[in-house]
Image (cartoon, rainbow, N blue to C red; front, side):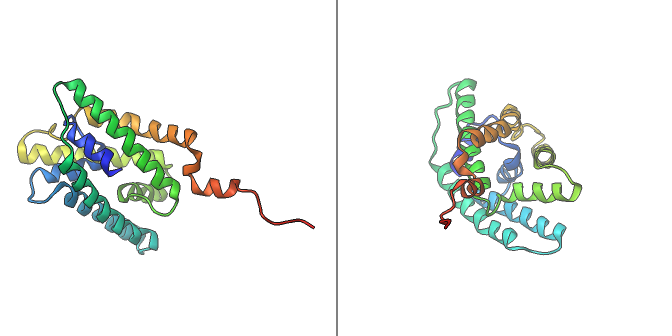
Length: 204
């Protein structure tokens, strides 16, 4: 997932909504993009704990995930050197990155242990309002995109430094891609895989 997101950021035509705030902050603070991402993810965990009023193991396990994700994001971001001659080159790498990080998201969800912190926060908000994950994720992405645009607008007088055509592409196609992986790669869903295994009990 970190490799795909690093590639989509390097494409330079807008980032996925979930990472927009971290990328916007990265442009104006003396931290790496991975550190900004880790701090934003930790903030998402903190908000989850405040909303639910009690930390759970699933909340706390998101913190090491956020830390490792930040390290991996820095690793790939620093080493990716994309050839971006035209807009179509950028769109190609953005799409390739989206295909990769969508698979990463689906793999994490299928493991059924923890969610990435932004997704965990979206789910927590959805649970409070009785929204399905699709609706709460859309609401979260809209707020994150708006906040990122406001950050760059206030500091650099440019709302489109982070939010651009790539943001729209990711917002439209990430969900369907995850749904496609669900159909094509059912073994990623560990709970269903367990349920599908035949019982080893011998009847007498």
